[in-house]
Structure formats: structure tokens, C-alpha cells
Image (cartoon, rainbow, N blue to C red; front, side, top):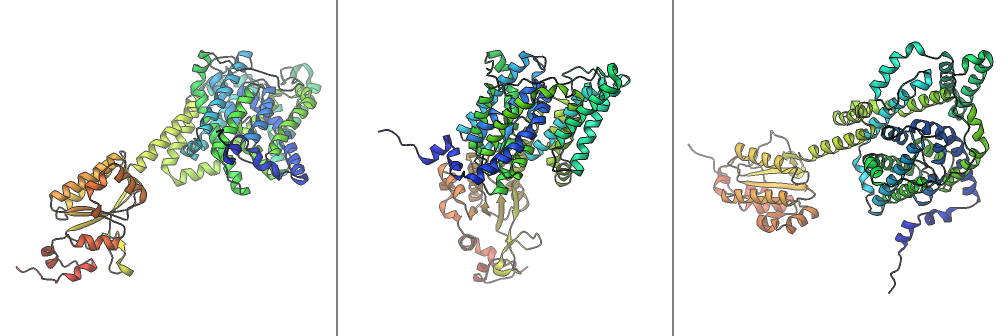
Length: 593
């Protein structure tokens, strides 16, 4: 019998079937206008990002064509726009410049190979339904990495901004040392073009925020360079330009899948994958919250993977979700992913029309634009919020930021993620453990953590908030040992377990061992308000039978009634605490000397 394909499976392989019925004249018109806006914006960005990545300028435009269309067709978000980004570009340059000279064919081949590898990893994670992985990457990692990448972008453009020679591939301190020695050689004409570009971009962004400030700054810088050439002639020949871009469709390409290339690029591919997926899914979820759309992280993984695989065969380097282009796409009125597809298609048309004009675009103007891009990447507000809110998050951000500046860039991501996980494990390895007693001053004698309230001389009640697993057991055992040392007369222990989601074998064994110790002392261990997850995990390892099913209670009232029957009534007679209602059933007999 031929297996039938379910609707969910069909939508998983063809997610565009979900939004295709929404298309009509109005939505297509809105998507067309949003796509045109996106295509115009990506034009200067693509060239700038390719420059950051050490790729020929046209490759930044190619990365915004086919990858954007494929990601829109097979992704989950209706507003996410994929293509070249600053972070991916800076990681690409930092990683590949070690193996080849930027801009050469060998370098381009490595970039295409890396793109293919990233796409395969993303696709595999999506098909394996591993979309939840991005939840383990702290926002502080992204903030620190982005700020570090921004500083590196600016530092690597110092040579183009001031017209001084600086060797490629150095770390931040190497670049700054070289620049210090080159201060006497600053070219005033190149610097004038860069400063004019930078200031014009700032002015447009401040006073005319609705205009495309990057395009205007690029044009203004080019005009300043032409003016300087006309006024000073031969003295300005050092103002190099990007050069005319080819007026062609994205040429077919092929990654280098040799074993050496894969081995060298594997760490970078994994780091880029982690960051690219986090970027794409977080942008999609952010826009989805505004538009009311629920984002499927697994489907987004698949869309991003297919996007990069396709891009590697159409001369595009690593593409992922773009913060500014996706936000612009939403604000421009995009209704469906057709807008991102239009952006990719219209970019092809625009490139064919304006590619020769890149011959007039000075590298100094590109440096000024990249200074603007770098400044915009640093989220000062979020950095300030992290610094005030949490020392742990500050440490994570700091490690990632300084790792990006002084280590290999891709390893800064690993360092940030690793520290995030370590701090998270440290947090969950110390579940909150507090003593609880009935408060006679509260309605229904609700339990309280007030240490001033009297305790029963035979029964101690603890509340544990956190799962019992191998990482947290040492903390729980220390709490049990401290309790036994301070209150040896309290032979009975009741654990309020509504804050415990599950217990692994180690956690279950710890409860069993504590129950055994207390039985030997004539007491017992009891569990109150046991969740389904904890019940099932204790039952599956056989721990529930050893603790005793009659020692497990689903309400505090039933627990106190049951446990009170096991207390030594001779001690109850002389006890003046009387903290339980059940205590009234035993007549009080004061101690006599």
C-alpha cells in the first residue's frame, strides 16, 4: 500500500502553499513596492558587505539574488529577507583570509565551499527538527558579537578611509599599531572623500530619515571624488575606485568539496551556521510578533539551508536574515514572502542597469559607508541594559565581545555560547531549597518561608524548585546533610515537589537513599504535590516503589493528615508549638521538671 502524504508533510516541503492563496492584486502590488524598496537598499549594502568579506563587489549583489528567492519560498517567515549581512561577511573574511588572498579566485572558491557547507548543516538541522537549538544562544552573545564585529569592520577599513597601507589578516591590536605608524602618510584627498561620505550619510539619516541614506552618501562621496579630480588632477590619482561591475546574471559556480577544504572550513562553517540561524530565526520571530504570525524554527532552518546551497551554485556567499532589510520590508507594506522574491528578481534588473556606474565609486566612499554600517551595528541601548541588569549576562557579552576583538572571530561565538551554557548549568545545578511552615496568621494557615515561625520538632518541610538531575544532586545532598546536622530530632522530612519537573536516575537514587536513612532513624521521607513528569520518572526507574507509594501525596492537607499519624504522639503531648490543625487532637501535657 502506497503511504499517503499528510498535509503537514506537504507544507513542510512546500511551505509556500500556505501563503500562496493569499495573493491578489492588492497583496501583489504591496509586495512589488516593498520588493523594489528592498532591491534599492541592498544595492549599496551588497557592495559594502562584499568588501567586508574580501569578495569581489558583485558577489555581495549575487548573494542577494537567488538566495533571497529560495529562502522566501522555503522559509517560514512572511517578512524575513535573506542575503549578505555584516556579521557573516566579517566572519568570512577573518576565517578565509588565512588560507587565500582576498579577492582572488582561490578565495572565492573557499567562500563558495563554506556557503555550501553552511547550507548543508542548516538543512540537516531543519530536517532533524532541531529548530530549538537557537534558544540556547543567549541574546547577550549576539549583542557582544555584533558589537565586536562592528569594531573590526571599522578597523579593517582604516586603510581605505585614510589611504594608508595596512597588511591584511591582522587582529585589532596589529591593525591599530600599523595605523599608528602610518599616521604621517595619511592621504588628505582620500580622507576628504571618506569624511564627506560619512558626514553626508549622518546628515541624511538625522534630518531626512525616510530617504535611503546609504545610496545618497555613496553618490555624494563619488561626486566629491570627481570634484577633487577636476580641481587637483594628478594629485588625486591615488583615489582608487571599486571598478565597473559585470552586467550579467549570477554566473554558475561550484564549491570545492575536497577533503582538505572541508576539514579546514569545518569550525568556521559550524560557527557561521550557529550565528546565521540565530539571526534568521530571531528576526523572523520579532517580525512575527508584530504581524501576528507564528514562526516555525525548523522550517526556517530548511529555508536557510536550501538558500545557501543554491547560493553556492549561483556565485553567492553565505546569506542569512538581514535585520535592516527585513524590518524595512515589513514597514514598506510587504504581505507575503513574494516581496522578498521580488527584491531578488528586481535586484538582477537593477544591477544590469547600473553596474557600469560602480567605476566611479571610490573605495574611500565605501569605507565611509562601512563606518556608518559599523556604528549602526552597535546597540548601545541594549549594551547599557545588559550592564545594569545582570552580571552574568555582562560576562557573556564581554567574553564574546573581547573574543571577537582579540581571538579568531568564529571562536568568539563558541566562547560566548559555551559560557552561556556553563552559567545556565551553574544556575540550574543549585535549585532553590527553602523550609516551609504553616503560618497561623494567614487564611487557611498557608505555608510560609518566614524563619521566625516555629517548626514541628518531628517534621521538617522543604520546598525544592528545580529538577533533580546529576548536576543538581550535590546541592540537594548538601541541603539534606545540613538539615540532619542542625535538626537531628526532625526524623520526618516532607518535600513539596510542585517545583520539580523531573528526576533522572541520580536524582531518584538520592531520594531513595534519603528515605532509607530516615526509615532507619524511625522517620520517613514524603513527597507532596508531585507533578506528572516527576511521578513518571520516579516510576520508570523503580524509585517510587522504594520510597513507598503511600508516602506520596497530591495535596498538603492529605499529606499533613497522613504524616501526622506517623509522628510520635508522646512528643506531640509535650509540644507547645501546635503548628498543625491535627495537633489539637492530642491533649497538651506540659513538661514537668
